[in-house]
Length: 197
Image (cartoon, rainbow, N blue to C red; front, side, top):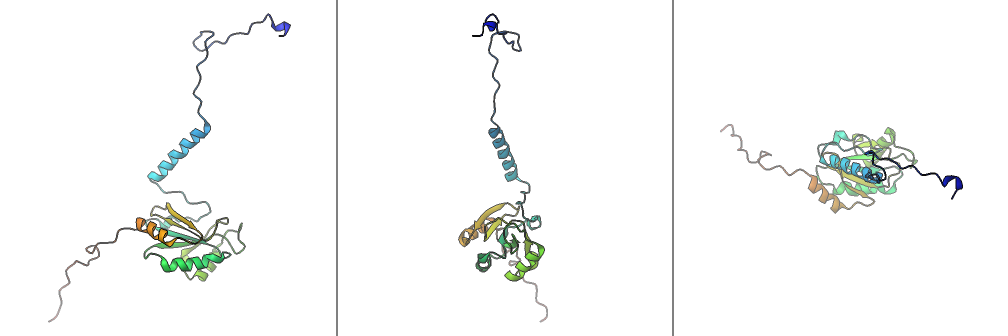
């Protein structure tokens, strides 16, 4: 021990109550990760409860397609399997399912986001109306891929590679509106009277 410090006494701390020598009450320590987790769970709950879901980074705004289930098909000119996969999907798609194609990149591939010209060329190559093909900045996405979304825009199914058509149909049946009854279609309405004799 230092000889100079021998005679010194360490001063005691006084707590807020003015009583000396008692240990201070410990503050509750909350881990930052726990707080962030709670925040994310709360935001996830709000997102699931309602409200428009956020768009996926790099995708164009698809809000105009909300209101009915939508199949988003991803492809790119450099992807050898994308066109063949679309042909297979096109033949097996359920009737009434809206489809939009997103071109993820140019012919140059990764790091080269698609342009309007790329989207027009892709529409011609697939034989679909140009309004169904939109450019996107998803240059690192593995292809071919598709995403089935519900009427509010939430993704319900994502498939990469060769799509499992049975799984796609099963999810579509869960999302599809119930078929109209015969009365709603006017099939049970009385026939109009015949004119003439």
